[in-house]
Amino acid sequence: MSLFGRLGDIARNIGDKASGAIETSKLNSRIDAEKNAIADNMRRIGEFYYQRHQVGAVNEPEIAEIFAAIDGHHATIAEIQAEIVRMQEESAAAQAAQQAAQVQPAAPIGIPAAAPVPTAGVVCQTCGASNVAGTKFCGTCGSKLELPVVELVAEERSCPTCGAKIPAESKFCGECGHRFV
Image (cartoon, rainbow, N blue to C red; front, side, top):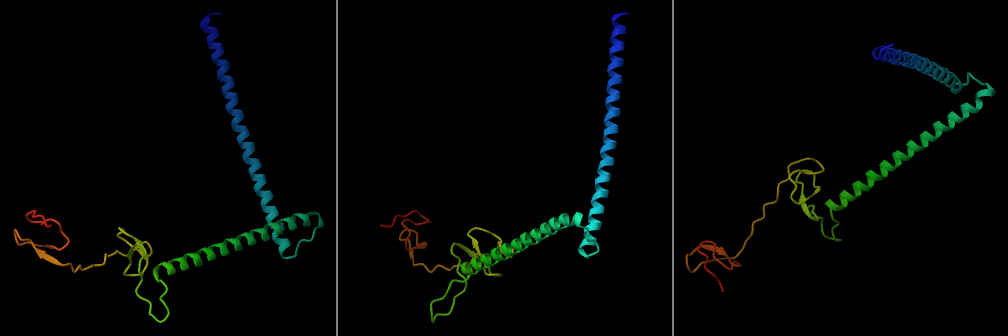
C-alpha cells in the first residue's frame, strides 16, 4: 500500500473515532437531560407531600424526620430574615439620628434653636441637609445648592496716586500698583 493510501486509512480511522465520540457525547447529554427530568419530578413529589404534611394530611413515620428537618430550615430562614429586618431598622434609625445631629445642633437652654448650621459645607435650602463644600446638588434631596450670598462690609480707602477705591487691608493698589506702607 502506498504512503497516500496509508494516510487516507489513518484519516478515515480518526474521522470514525471523532464521529463516535460526538455521538457518544450527544447520547450522554440526552441521559443527563433525562436524569434532570427525574430529579425535577422527584422534587415535585417531595413538595406535594410536604404541603400535605403541613395541613396534617400525611402522617408517615418513615418521612417524619425529613419533614422535621425541613420545618427546622424554614424556622431558621424566618429567624435570619427577622435579623435582617432588625439590622436594617437599626441602621436607618442611626442614620436618621446622625443626620438630625448634623443638621440641627442643640440650642443652649433658654435660647431658641437657630437655622441649621453646616459643620463644613453648604446647607440645602430645601431639606436642611448639610453638604460637602463645593457640591452643586444636595446629596439628600437632589435640589440645586445655592451658596449663601455674604455681603462683606469692609473698610475702603482711596489710592493717593490714582484715587481708586480699594479694601483697607490691601498692601498694593489694584489699579496702579501703588504700595501702601
